[in-house]
Image (cartoon, rainbow, N blue to C red; front, side, top):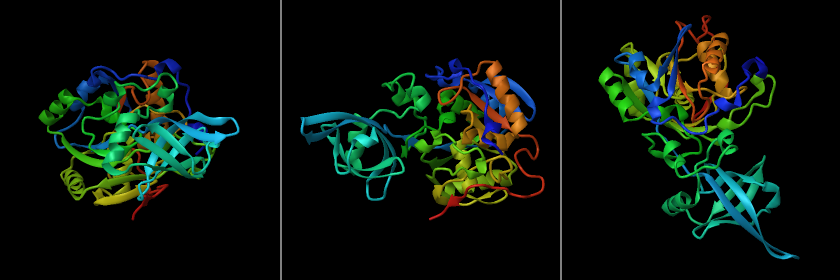
Length: 370
């Protein structure tokens, strides 16, 4: 398939720069097979069945955006220059891979100072990214980053306004536990205590998994033939308890519904057969496109995604390309709010939806196990 197959025109005024308040007042487009219903996230429990299981990503977004200065002595004396840094992912030795702007202005070995307690040295660079060694590690690094960093809002929000103190709360889920993401699992941002209480009363079960969302989720697809695209890898974990809960739901005939594409990609990476998942830890670069055989996920709650993105390909795989085009046309016509702070959809594919009738898994990408 071609990249243009996943394109659409989106009015810029539908791009949300702030979330709905309260969170659960966001709109919810329910696509049940070919039927489309306009609802609210507060109605979510009424669209689910007792015994269904929502799978929630409990990653915690770190304040990964830093503004600092690098200092250089030269013929013109001691000069300072502003450097913008977005942390991407940590290495086992405590160093961080990061995006630097402007990268060409800084030399290997130079120091960038972010605050009185936080500085980093540029160790090396590769393919447009840099490796940084910070002056502190462990808990001291976490505390210094919390004080100096800002929430890493997606580019389409950051281009319209800077991150502020309110984003510390807005761009974090209720159940964020394990620090390491540089982007939020945004479908989960709609949940509040009222929604959680309604789900419990409905008899809907919950399972937590962890996938540390990377900045690569916002990288554009640059190839015309999507088969040539290579996904960024992200670290994730499905605990033995989580795997057992998901398997029990499938065995009992309940539906497994990930909240967000990150949770979906993780549980499909951990699948070991149709309807069966195993404990799993590692990096996944699974790439889900039309023709993919979903082995664990029965449906999906997700926000509305960027044109020509890998996430548009994922939802097209689940619902079918023609059906997802109708869903997005409806969302635009009804003025749903798009992207990370926007409204949500509940995608319930028809029987055999998103699966190949001929049994060919047609999976692209892979889950890389340690």
